[in-house]
Length: 295
Image (cartoon, rainbow, N blue to C red; front, top):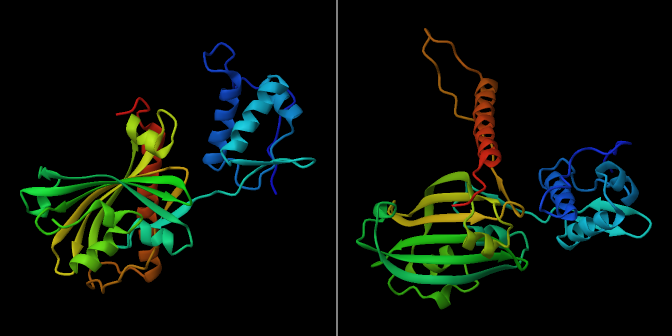
């Protein structure tokens, strides 16, 4: 178990002149360190007295901040043993798999819930033209895991193909499972993109996030067993509860012409790792530089 170090003199980390109360500033400072893993799960926080010294605040300020973090489930407090960073309640999603979020979470034992927010017919536009129909079904859902909101999903489907789809059939159900069972459509391939974006007011309300919070957006198009596009979707994930996992596999190594240098399997793996590192750094840059004014 690691321990958070505390200096003997106050650091200028909080702003007494700010309109934001000191206990909220302290909560935000500690919360950020927990969420960015500067304080990983199991880390012992300093005592209340030590936090008073470090941040130059009263005990009541410290207690309010720690109480708020406890209510969020970010820290655990016990009599006689101080406060420690709680285990992360996060769900992992394999973004390179065609299975949807509901199926992946359900396979881990989580209780998955789905609320249909709306199901309407709309005219196709540039973003849904790939579906090849003049009108599309626009589906909006809120997904929870163990009762906690984790994703808002907007999906567009070709209206003629799925005209009989109902909101009732999708309540607490997997869309992909319903498409397979009711329409004989199997999702077998697709294209995916991940980016960090600011959340608008309604999205933050649904995910129970604070103002100016960034979210992780997964966008894509899915194809059926015959190679036809059957789904366009955008899924906004709660950044504290969902983690994207990516499996790394060795690239196929082709024989290089004699006049060109050949690459060993280890070279291919290293090259793949370098490219993945660059992609992840770009995602991290987006998170750190996102416009917190919202959209």
